[in-house]
Length: 424
Ligand SMILES: Nc1ncnc2c1ncn2[C@@H]1O[C@H](COP(=O)(O)OP(=O)(O)O)[C@@H](O)[C@H]1O
Ligand SMILES: [Mg+2]
Ligand SMILES: [Zn+2]
Image 1 (tube, rainbow, N blue to C red):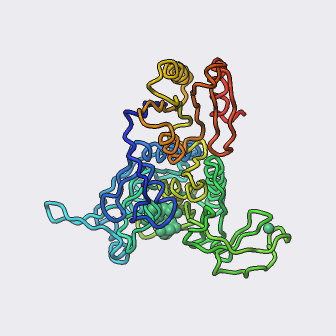
Image 2 (image 1 turned 60 degrees about the vertical axis):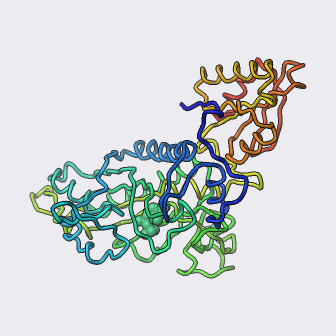
Image 3 (image 1 turned 135 degrees about the vertical axis):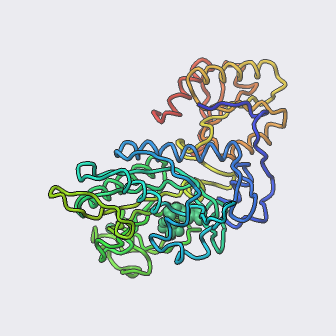
């Protein structure tokens, strides 16, 4: 639970579009005081931005735990020896941040964690009876991207959920892969986002089979072909042509869309386990290489991509699960004792109901404050003004619907609770 007085909150909003930003979601994150650039592709998350990041992470964590995966936490600093075992120390190239310790030993800052997890599993599991297992973390990743851009979309330091599963058969990997597919669908659906799963290469079962989860947005870097009548989508360059009829439902004609890759699920097979001797003993006491899958979600990229989908000319329109605060309580005139007293009362009962609300007690003009609240995308506003108060009422306004309801002060918190829990 998080509640605040706006006058105390670090939220340095900007009136003008910052010149460093090209796409709307990046502009709005900067203008709304969510993030600040420290260096190319490196950002500080301010209170609002960090809360949104945690909201994405919370939904991911709940769904991953529900699927039976176990959360761990691996180091950022990885000794080069592990990466030498797979050969990636030499082939990964300039994207890998390399550092040297005081003893001249080489390390990298983890861009992904196959080596570390495979080392963990080979030293802690022996028997087929201990498999399958799926381990995940939510961690900072480092990639020295050639062109860091679009804010959190392509950073050099960014938050990722990465999961790795280990199996004794291809069939069991397939089962877990489908489980992760399902889990990812639940995650992006819960977050209220419009996504497609791109069948990157349906011909190539086994080996490096993978699928990407794309949020649909015009600014997306990936071109896809999507069916307007079902969920089918493919990579633009791969197999189909625009206008071709959808192979899944036979109904719609495929149309070109743009997408932002927010998640990626892979069947790795034995690529890492063979090189690193990650083996188990089967029923006949025979050594076999474990069969692996891996599953990633960009946490910050998802948060920002959500804005590409959910905004208007006034700012962000957060889906409820992502919103840093679910409602803003806003007296029209903070110098007015009666308005302020009602606002305080509503704020205190909201706290009692564990609602994540912000009390906008700033001394500025009401128009300026309303603009800020809309810019940062708070889903509901409770506006306490002189006219309503005469009848013992306040206004509740929805950010997405634009709808205003005049409600009795006494009912305000019940109504707010229902709206916030999505029951109304
Ligand atoms: N530079 C980056 N900045 C922010 N998020 C990233 C970045 N690179 C990857 N991600 C996120 O992490 C997820 C998993 O990454 P992965 O598929 O391994 O990377 P890539 O697609 O660049 O090969 C991606 O789907 C994306 O959401
Ligand atoms: Mg990818
Ligand atoms: Zn279709």
